[in-house]
Image 1 (cartoon, helix red, strand yellow):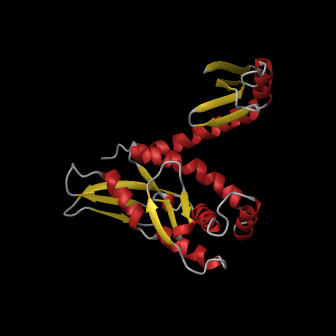
Image 2 (tube, rainbow, N blue to C red):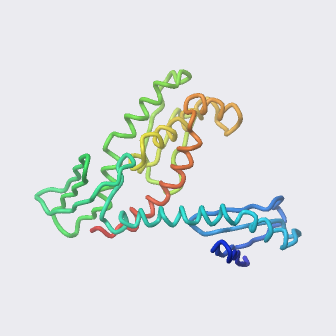
Length: 243
């Protein structure tokens, strides 16, 4: 892996790019995410073409990097143990001593009661996300909208960083991310609809997306929001310092 720099002094744009080559790579591929800016190309592609490609995309790349930085900053409060998210709302987190362990969520705050300093607040929050019933309610609503679902599938929640949901059509079972209820209702509904559509179309083909768009016209918008939010929120919870 090599590195090179894109610097546009006139616009104040500066970022580093990690560059890899592969004989199997057919096109120049650009990816921007939590691991920074990465570009890959065929090993026979002239480097000047790769550089020019990234240069042409520099404004978009820089803008997206700024958005990611803003999201990281917003979730720093979660990592520090000051706030948690419920249905897309950022709520103050209060940890207090009491006679029994518990999590109480209201419209304006989340109160975690612990019996001792040894209690793991992050684990208590994860347990609340698993048992609050929000995802089950939205999932049932989505099932009711799917006329092709005659036998409602079994739904389970499981903690995952990158996987929002998985459908097992042969088993009539769907597994959803345990942290889904941290996001907004539209994001949750989009993830549910996505997996339910796999009961009819197992692959991500044209028929699958036609059905998904019919059921969830704005799925692209909320699908992108979900893909950006949940991995970051997972990291913040796993690095939680609020004990």
